Length: 252
Image 1 (cartoon, rainbow, N blue to C red):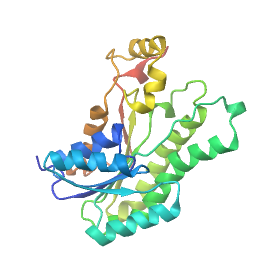
Image 2 (spheres, rainbow, N blue to C red):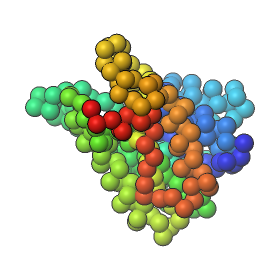
Image 3 (cartoon, rainbow, N blue to C red):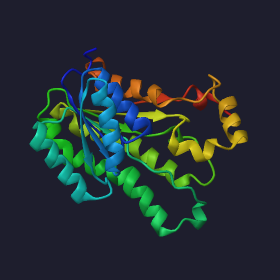
């Protein structure tokens, strides 16, 4: 499959879960992957899986919370590839706390990873994306941008901000031939959500609330990201795809 043939793609937070699935699906469609994660061992695991399947992947350790790390990562991409066709801002954290009890450390962790991280990556990747004939950015938001759970208020704030960031940057980057979109996953069965889903009552309630009566998989999200990053979406920018099995249809 050649949907992304020879395109250079950087996926942040690709050491596991949704990020890993996105990187693997990109590779299936012909992309050359740069696998980023704060944990180099996890990044290498993903890269190895891609190489074992016949793809090309290169692992880079960087913390998106650090401007020095992000700058160094983009310099490494420039040195190795000279261009960047696709940037996927997937790295994120879930910090669980009542808003009234949330301390400054937890607040900063959420903001730095979920919002400032993508801002840094987009800004520092601009020059590389501008060199591409297929420049595309896909940001990972969440249905939590419009649906809310107790103790996850700051997560919702950061994901709603990602959607606003997507629209504003799409408008600003359009003259440079760079498209910017987002995906909003529903409840996806990953290690990040494992601590919530291990409660059978909570898990069953989510499944019951979802129109398709099931949880999503990382591969469901990956397919949507691949579409938005590909030429099939060449006239789509500043918008998003909600991939949630219909949970946002519920009014209960």
